[in-house]
Image (tube, rainbow over all chains, first blue to last red; front, side):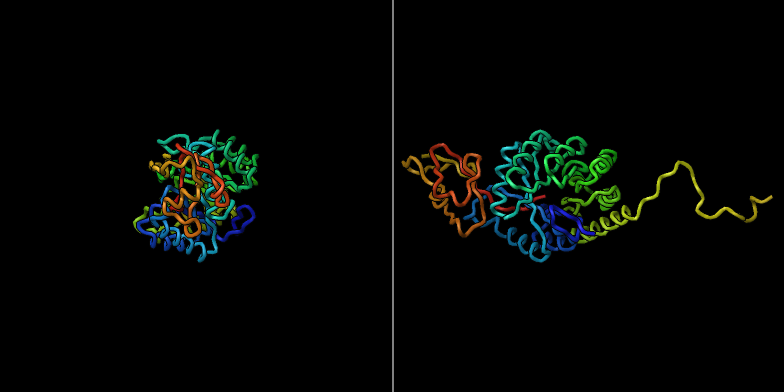
Length: 264
Length: 70
C-alpha cells in the first residue's frame, strides 16, 4: 500500500537521508537499493564560486530523477524558530518544494528538539504555505499540538539522532499512534537495526526516516535492501493483525487424544 | 564598508551601501549559474530582491548551498 505524504502517494514507506556515506556513488546506490522516494538534504554556508557543493547536488538530482522521488530539505542546525523559518524559505527557493523536515534543536548533547520553538516555527511556516514534517520527541501532547496546527505528518524520534539505539520508549510511540489515528506518523531518528524499523511498522507507523543506520553500515547498499524488506515485513504484519499476547501457555498442537503418557 | 559573508570579514571600499547583487558579484558569484540562496542579517532575500536589497556597513550575508543531510 502507498504512503501518502501531503497528497503524494509513494510506493516506499522508507524516507532516507543523504549524509555520512563513504562516497557519493555509494550514497546513490544505497538510496536506489532502498527503494525510497523521499531523500533528505540540507543547506550550509558555502561559496558557490568554489563549486565544492555542486557534485553532491548533481548526484541528488540524478537520484530524484531515477526514482521519480521527492527532496525533503531539513533545517538541521537551527535552534530558534526564526532561524528555521529563514532556512526553510531559502530551501524552498532552491529546491522548489513546500515540503520541509522541520528540526529545531534545543539541546546540543542529545540533539533533542525544542518543543516550544518547534511549535512556533510550525505555526509560521504553515501560514506561509509550507507542508511541515516536524521532527519531534515522543511526547503525545506535543504531537497533538503539531497535528492541531495542521501538520498532516508528524515525525517523533525513536531515540536521539545518530545513536542507533532504536525505539527507546515503545509505550510513548504506541500511545501516539493510538491517540492520533488519522495522522501520518513517521518514526524518525535513532534507528539502528532493520528490526527497529520493523517494530515501528508493526506498531502501525506509516513510515520510517533513517540515515546513519544505512550510511554507517559496513555495506550500505545491502543494509538499504535489508531496511526495505524490514519495513515491508512490519507493515504486512500490522495489516495482517498481530495476535494478542497471552499470560499463559496455550498448546499449538491439538490436545485431544494426546498419545501415551497422559492417558490412564 | 565592512561586511561579513559566510562569517568571513570583507572590506568593500568606501561605498556606504551596495546591492546584494553587487556583493555577490564581488564574491565571484553569478546568480544565474549557481544553486544557492541568500540571507541578509538572518532574513531570507529572494532572488528577485537581489538588486533592490542593500547591504550596509556591518551587515552579515549568508550564502547557502545544498549539502547532504539526514
